[in-house]
Amino acid sequence: MTRPAQLVLVVAAGVLTGLAGAVGGPVAAAGPAGVAPRADGGVDAGAPDAGPIADGGTARADALVSDGGTGYDLRYLDQQRALAFRIYESVVEVDAVVIPPPPYDPESPLVYDGGGTVVAPGVLLTSDDWLAPAAKIRVMRHDGVKVPAWRLAHDPRRHLVLLGFDPKTAPGLVTVAGVAKVPAPVNDAPAAQVVMPTTLIGQAPGIRLAAALRDGPELFLSGDAGNGVPAFDTAGRLVALARRPVPSRTRSAGIDGATIRAFLEAALAPAMARRAVAAPAPDGKKPAPAPKHGGRGP
Image 1 (tube, rainbow, N blue to C red):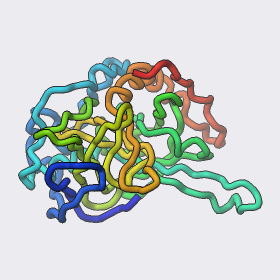
Image 2 (cartoon, rainbow, N blue to C red):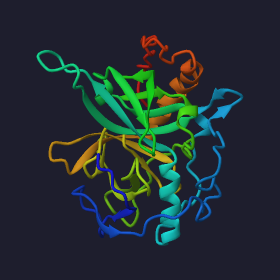
Image 3 (cartoon, rainbow, N blue to C red):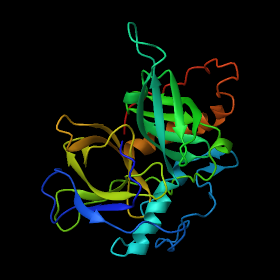
């Protein structure tokens, strides 16, 4: 995953006829958090975590789900900056450390990176394929410091996993604004417009516009993304996750918001209950295996 140090907004050109990618140009680097109010009346960028999915210690996935609100108006630079910061506060890089088998040197592990979205204090959501062989999982804070993470829940049918981390070791992260369906296409376009982060660590948040296209039951996101990189609507709500690039690397297979919602309804509350007790022990022993939520998909 690239780690640009500037805010870049990539704008899909004209009427989208496929998922060949998005084009656009640079936008000025974002200023301090909270440079513009939330157009939908939600939490401003930089505001304390309002904990929309925690209620007396019990997570409620339905509190995350919202299909209303007007969102940020991306015609204006200050709104672009505000949305970039809001997304940046809820997304981190996740590293999967894989120990290679003999005859490779176990002291030189492979490291794969992806995206994790904060869905509750100390809980991240990401896709599962790339984490399967990981011997160790780490969260990369925005300042580049790595902190440990561990599996809390896994649904192999939906290809989703929840990871736990100690929120005290990664201050400043904010729970995602909500979970919503992929927005509908406008002006008879074949694909919907979504917003994806381009910067997970560094000094300035970055976002790009991407196309979300359905091909039968499958969802695809434009651009070379994968490994749980999230997509948002203009209100900052999570609407999809990229799973893996297709062979041409011009688009990525995605997981839609309805599937994410179903997973969170089944797994989030138990995962939050397990987070404190499932943390790796100081002696390095692994926690108990995460329960699987392999019920029928939405």
